[in-house]
Image 1 (cartoon, one colour):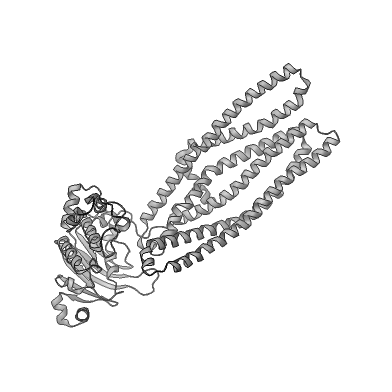
Image 2: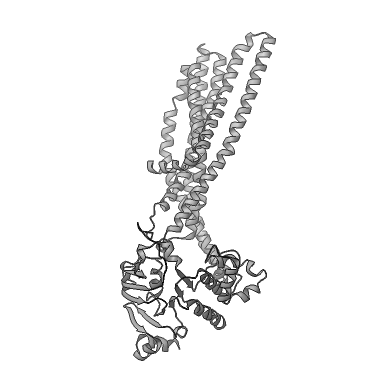
Amino acid sequence: MRKNLKRLCSYYKPYMGIFLLDLFFAFLASAIALVIPLVVRYITSNVGSMTQTEAQNQILLIGGVLVVLVLVQFVANFYISDIGHVMGAKIERDMRAEIFAHYQKLSFAFYDEQKTGQLMSRITSDLFDITELLHHGPENIAISLIKIIGAFVILSGISGYLTAAAFILVPFMFTYAYFLNKRMKRAFRQNRVKIAEINAQIEDNLSGIRVVKSFANEEIEKEKFKEGNNGFLAAKKNSYFYMGFFHSGMTAFTTLINVVVIIIGGMLLARKLVVVSDFVAFLLYINVFTDPIRTLIDFTEQFQNGYSGFERFVEILNIEPDIQDKKGAVKLTDVKGHVVFDDVSFKYNDTAHRVLKHINLDVPAGTYVALVGSSGGGKTTLCSLIPRFYDVTGGSISIDDKDIRDVTLKSLRDNIGIVQQDVYLFTGTVLENIRYGKPDATEEEIIEAAKLANAHEFIMGLPNGYNTDIGQRGVKLSGGQKQRLSIARVFLKNPPILIFDEATSALDNESENIVKDSLEKLAHNRTTFVIAHRLSTIKNAERILVLTENGIEESGTHEELMEKNGVYAGLYQWAK
């Protein structure tokens, strides 16, 4: 916890000036609050013995000073509420940027195990509570300390007996708070988990809403959500149970302090050990004293919320990317595209058996290689190893005689273009989505890439041409249109190595022919790996690899493999 708190405090560093001024104004506002009961005591003790003129002049002077103090307090509170909150928002921005940047570093293996809604929860609701703690936490502690210490000093000066009576319950109160705090922390952490689960469920439902509606399964989704929602309610009930005990107990303690002071004060008045003016001032200071205790109550709840969120935040930041640049990694430059797999084996973290076993493959620059085989044979996995979406668990992969683990990830992936079956387009315009392949591309370059991908004609037929908004994930476009935009994106990137992952298998015949023509133009003079289920689309490949659980079972041209009458010939006949 000490390590986490130190890390939490480090986020103040860029805003230390604002933070210290925020604390100063918190102290100032609290000090002014301590003055009021002293003024009441002075008036009740001294004004009665003055002449009417003296008394009026004295009260007007005191009133003028108090008005000035109220104005100073106004400025202090305004700074705390405005500038202090902006500081909190800036820290929230910094933390959100940090965790988002960390998300970008994490590999496919991490995302294979995570739910998007839960990751979103850590970057939204968790961070809000953390920054509320970072802004109000120190400020609340500062206000509470000066009020408690100031009240104690002043109360001691008024009456030692009454001070002892007021503070006798304080140790019991803090002991009570300490034991309930532990239970509250567990309860609030469970709340975080449940909120993240609900976010994941909502994200899953909304992303798949078309599937839900196509199967008319709205009621099933409602039931699934109801179960998660009830789990969240149960977690909330548990946290509110302990919070209820905490709040009611602390309120009871503060009221008891007043009761004890009234009883003891009454007895001291009866024995002439305390004068009325001191007793009235003491009662006013008791309220000044109990106020910061209430503030500490709020801080405790705020701390549980914020700290449990920060623990979840740190959990993500502490995950080291399993794929990253090694020390001394160099840029991959002047790439020709000669790819070599040397005794490559691979298995996913959650599987005992190896997906790929001892793969040896030499693909000269500019070669067109097709990968075929039954599902689960490792075709997509093999291609995912080239851009290091996953790292090999045995052997090595090299490009132009450079081990891909010895080059920077960015330079490696800059030289590889991927066209997938499941096209992902971002919310925005056609132009923005094509430009994703080369962020600094001119409009002329984008149009040229679209023409090469056979996309220019349909784009010009859209309501606003290249500036047409295509909706979330390109929902306003057909499958063939989306695929051609993804190809245009790769044309713009212009990489020497290409990977086509079943890029036409989900298209109708007309769209497939258009896309196939685009892919052939794109593949010209580039090292190309094509994963295909429709074997008719790769008959012209310079080399066809048949992948099975045993590795590369067969290799050759279409004619050579048909003559062997082996696995490939069987797959081809079955596909016909």
